[in-house]
Length: 214
Image (tube, rainbow, N blue to C red):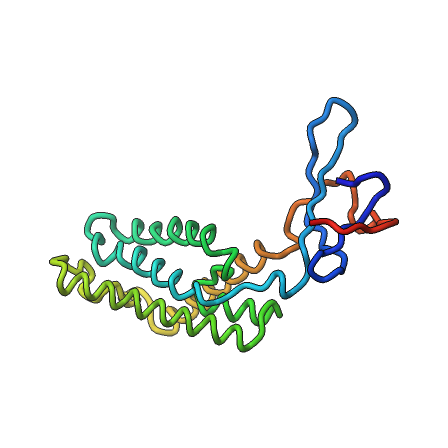
């Protein structure tokens, strides 16, 4: 909250003004008050690491693809499709603050093109994702081979496009759906996507003084 005169908080790590995220009404008995949320805009303080992408991808593919390998006859294609959502949501909350939870080289490419990461970081993300995919595939094959579990897909979760569409049509659908996935990820993770009250315009709330905050 503003204390006394309006102040703009400074990042303790960089000394630069912090980035305004949003404001939220605070219940009071008197006039409406607002709490203001700021985050550091220091790239080093905001840095994420890609190493956890390997474990994230391994878990995503083992459980989501595993739902087809182990239970396709019971849950069907809709159940398999829905299995990806809860697993990915849980991983987004668990490792999102660490790696950003890309989970897909296409998302990493979109983040790279948006300028949020550099080429070396993107290569690290993709490499970690491939390692995770290999680990998940190996784990699924091991469970089928020595665990006494039958592969309900007869192909370890891989599939084809079926008789109702050809290769070009499949490629086009894949491109469009992947574009939609990347677009949604980039839009909902924008730092300026947080809702801001209409009562105060943060762009015009110019601070008269600034003070350091934790």
